Length: 212
Image (cartoon, rainbow, N blue to C red; front, side, top):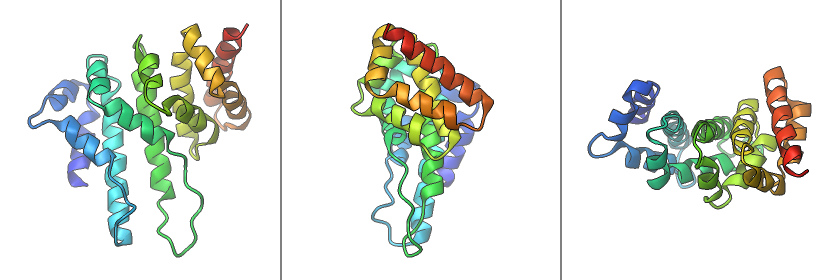
């Protein structure tokens, strides 16, 4: 957990991105391993919470790296995009009873960080949409996050990633097929933030233009 926190802090500085990604023996494989941490088999509440926090920090670190134009192709090639896309696609859990360790809050924040990573990745990167669509379930997961994620920040970041994809008509059509218009209508009607509602409106307009 401490190591994940240190890596997340370093990844917050764009000047350190390439040095971090090139570090020996390789920070990316370490971050990927931390993102894939599962709490399912842990024996105690403390272990579960520690693993969930570690996963959150590692996902946030990757989300920061995914905004660096010089690293995007490498992140896709080495599996970071797929790992983050799967986290963004993981639906928020149902409410748990008092006898089960509740990690909903950290899971929701981790999903928001993953959605932020995809929004960073899709910004100003021509092949981003194809790369996202190449990960099984990633597009559908983004649409679900935009419509159903617990945190509005996750919904906003997912919508932003989808909006970047709608710049290409063929990808916009795929977003429509995945339920994007329904998700944007829901976000436009439910978001508390005017900025998020405006983003949903812009994305919805792009999706409707794609089907005319």
